[in-house]
Length: 339
Image (cartoon, rainbow, N blue to C red; front, top):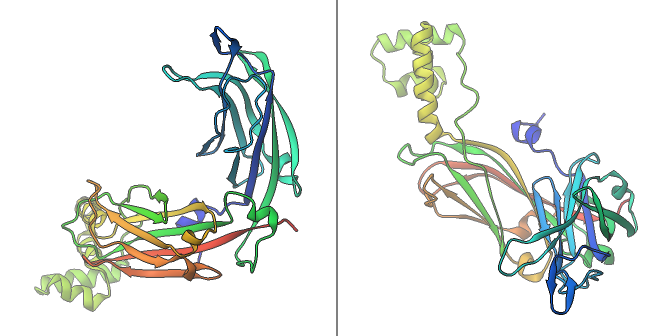
């Protein structure tokens, strides 16, 4: 079983929900001027950590959107909920909330194998605040790269999902300062990892092995010699020598965690980014840049052609020119019509 902590903590999305904002009706007026009461509405859609904002329609309580009104959203579970809000754009003050459709269960939208319209009632301070009409369509994700895109897929803002799995780094020089972060770029699309953490699994070794390590230490063998004889990593040798005393082991473990947070940092994260399959993107490279706690690059970027992950994946051990190895995997999945 190849499932690891990253797979358990970051399950893949179930699919993509495409939302087209069509129109609003009888929205609240937030602006009063000589020409009458009006608003400059725009829509914000939030699903989990995803947040998208539409274009602004000026001076309308019954706006119709014709551009800047389509978004693709990753959906992980049908029980996820969306929050859809309409705001009035203000030039010199904070934007006013015109109305909200809160806690919208996504499950009904996921049945939309064809575009389906939904009219959402808006509320503001417990009162009706007009309606918003949206159109939704559901797409599945496939690991098979299509020879050509079905027109419903091609017409949208994204056609594929870039997947970057970051496990951790081995044997990084101790001079670098944790925590670390990986910045990821593909053409003009960006994402970044969470901050690294020390290895999560530092446990006592078998008593027999620990006893061998202690006897070798008493015989004046070096740390490296003991590591080669026992097959333990140098950090594990330090723990093995100390583990016959709980207090010594606790101190050794604390010191080991501090050292390994620099030399063996972990991410255990999978990042997802929806991309358009345009010519610039298809010819782009996926660039991974490792930075330290000051956001300073500590190695030359790792650059791999996105095309090499089409219908396959790129997996490393990627050697860092400053020392160490980044364990990562780059792959793609593709929007597809539901069966």
